[in-house]
Image 1 (cartoon, rainbow, N blue to C red):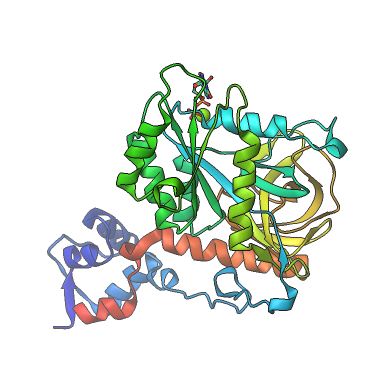
Image 2 (tube, rainbow, N blue to C red):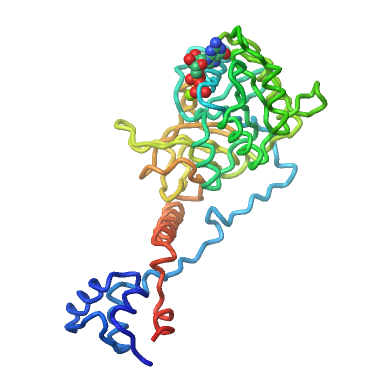
Length: 371
Ligand code: GDP
Ligand code: MG
C-alpha cells in the first residue's frame, strides 16, 4: 500500500510511538499515531533511529578467537599439568581443602615465596605438577562454561562424611558430567566422630559414582582437610587420572588461554589472572583478552615469583592491559599490538551488536516488507 501508520512504524522499530512522533516533529512533520506515512518519511525516521547502522555486519577475520582451530601435530604435544576444580555443597570443606593442599605442598625450591591469590595455584608431587583453580563453587564453573571456556580437566567433588549428598553435590556431579570431566570423590571430615564414609559411597551410587571396590570406576578418597589426612593420596589419585588421560599441549606457539579473574588494581592498573592453556606466554607479548588488549608488562606466579615465560597449565597474573576483561574471557596472543588492538575492537563491536539483541536489529528491508 506504500505507507504505514506512525504506530506500525514504531512497533517495527521497537520504539515508543511518542519517540517516533518526536522524531517526526524534529523532521518537520506533525503526526498522530494513526497517521499514514509515505516511504520517504519512513526512510527518514528509520535513518534517524540509525536502523541501517545496527545491521552493519563485521567480517570475522580468520584469526579471531572463535575461528582459530587448534591443529597441533602429535609430535608437537608435550605433557602438561592437569587442571583441577573442587566442587561440592556449601560447608563440606572446599575452601579448607584448597588451603590445606596449597600449604602442605610448597616445594623446597619455592619455599619462602609469598603466596599470591591469582585465581589458581600449582602444587608439585613426585616431580609432577597439578594446577588447582582457586575459586571453589559452582558459579565460577558454570559461568566459565556458559562463556564457552573449558578450563577444567578433573573435578574433585567434596562430600562431608558427617552430612551426605546434598543439592549442590548433585549439581556438581551434573556439571562435571555435562562437561565430560572425570570425577574424583573426596569424602571429607572423616575425623569427625559421626563421620560415615560408607554411607556417602552408598548414596553416590545413585548418581553412577561407584567405587572401585564395589565394581565401579570412580575413585574415592577419604580425607580430613582440617587434619590434613590423606591429602597426599588425593594428589596421587589426581596424577593417576592425569596419566590415564594424558593431558597435552603444544608449548611452542603463541599463547592462548582463559581469564580466570580480572580487576582494577590501584597500584598496577588492570590486572588479569590467566590460565595459559596452549603455547607459551612471554613478557612483551601482545594479546587480546575478551574485548580488551594489551602487552604483557609483568607476570607473576602463585608464589609471587616474577616469570619471563609461562607454559601450558600455568596460572599467572599479568599486567599491561588497557582495560579490565571479564572472568571466562578467552585470552590470545597475536603477532603485534596493532593486530591485537584491531581484533579487540572488532570483538567489542560484535558484543555491542549482540547486546542490542535481535530485537533492535531492524533493516530497511524489514521495513519495506511491511509497507
Ligand atoms: P566450603 O563452604 O565447602 O568452602 O567449606 P569450608 O572449607 O568453609 O568448611 C566449612 C566448615 O567445615 C569450616 O568450619 C571448616 O573448618 C570445617 N571443615 C572443613 N574440613 C573439615 C574437616 O576435614 N574436618 C572437620 N572436622 N571440619 C572441617
Ligand atoms: Mg568456601
